[in-house]
Image (cartoon, rainbow, N blue to C red; front, side, top):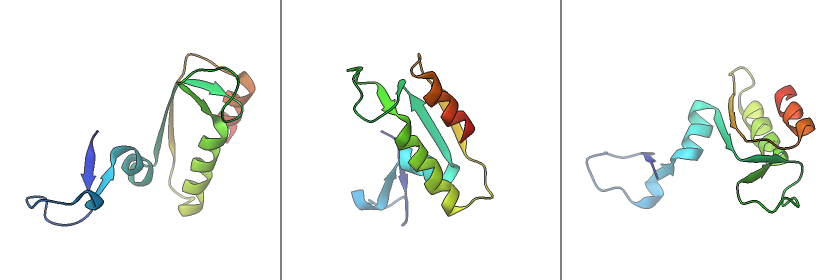
Amino acid sequence: MFRVPIEGNTKEHLHDDQFSYAPSFISRERRMIFLRGVIIGWPGGNMGRTDQFAASQIFDDIMAMNIEDSTKPITLIIESPGGLMDIGIALYDL
């Protein structure tokens, strides 16, 4: 997994707590959210798939980014084979 240094000289050995993992870096610094998987309505839905995600988790992330800075855009990239249409539209409307 890609890691980004938080602080310190990059030529010196950095401890694990001086790194931020790429997903949190991309979310925080670039204001991007990547979604891969089936869109379901609620966490732990009855579809039984490991690649599913609940839109409520994404809503929380988007709202937190909006509270942090409401003037900057948020990029949402969705790669999904399908799922619940009303939840997909709710993501679009948010």
